Length: 142
Image (cartoon, rainbow, N blue to C red; front, side, top):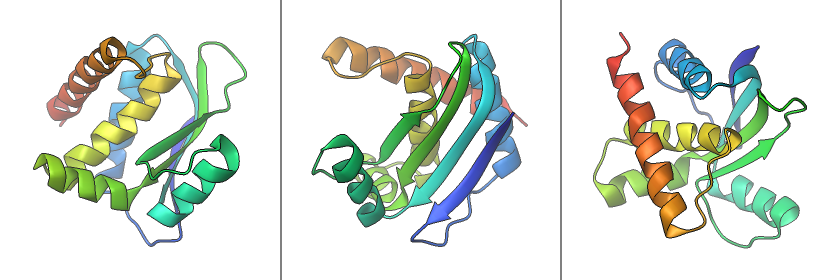
């Protein structure tokens, strides 16, 4: 049972790693799931678009790709790839702190693993509400 952080094609160090691990574990538990192994891989745009093209058949830039490796229904196991370039650009676009946008993207992947989708407008709204609730959990941690 672990949350781990890696980087590919870039040198990247996540701020407040212990707090983020506690937070994500709390979110997973609050959704009625068990943590198995979640790997966050921070990378650049080129690394992530390559994955997007090879494995998903999409030729677009994205901020996150989540691969669900879970073998048991309520136990989360995944590789979550995040483009720190996309996160930074989106943070500037939405005029928020980079770390806040990164946390939103990180929990977005967890929420997908918990069954939330974001294809329709209604699903996007439900996802956003859940992201906001999860970010509030982070803000309440010491």
